[in-house]
Length: 338
Image (cartoon, helix red, strand yellow):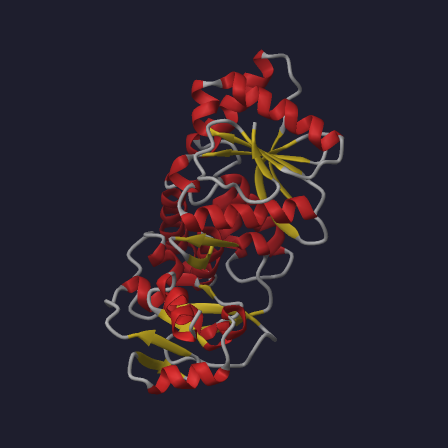
């Protein structure tokens, strides 16, 4: 394949952009890069980024360009995350990105770059193809603006409304809020006092949004006389991978309940496959019950969990989906539908 065909292929999934750091993975050379910058078919956006001419501008393009220009390791951050998720009255006039300290000192004309001491793996998600912080991680950053005692009351109202909105949109759960408060308060972060107070008013499981599927799965298991699962636990080996809907009390088994709304776009599938792979690498078997099976075919949910438990007991680290899985064939390696 000609080098420019490779550039076009890469740009198709990146709003028209190609980043210099992607050359090795594309099978291209630095000579190809300089040729693209000179041939007139690509617009130079920065020393690290080019854009295919004629690509229509959009907010998604600006966001993707800002992240690529500060990558590898960059994620959408703080107010830009909240704007991208559609929370509050935030906007994308100025793009904020974050990057762990120590990766690179490169600056960017396309974004405001924040260097973080650390960012947990399960605080990063992919939304409409964009790597971003979770809503909760971004709201913690926003809460820091109201850390001063005289601003706590204002912050409680504003952040509280944003939290409730995120919960209604299934972008945050109260269990995850409590877990994050417990973790971050140990590091002495600003905004912890405010977020802890908000968390105390929102106990895990008190929201119908976060407990509906969990309640139904536990009800099905209980009615069948089968040992129930433990709700929402952070799983992983040496580093946490993320919060799963359920896990087995005794076996290395994680169980997820997936909906077509949030788990079927290409970016959602890619994010799920990566997380399930990391769970397998941490010696967990993964059972995925699809929402339509949970509510319409509960016997398939029971069958999926029973088989996943047998696989976990046998040490088989695979990903087992219930029959309602809508993902297209072929499935990723190590995945199968019962």
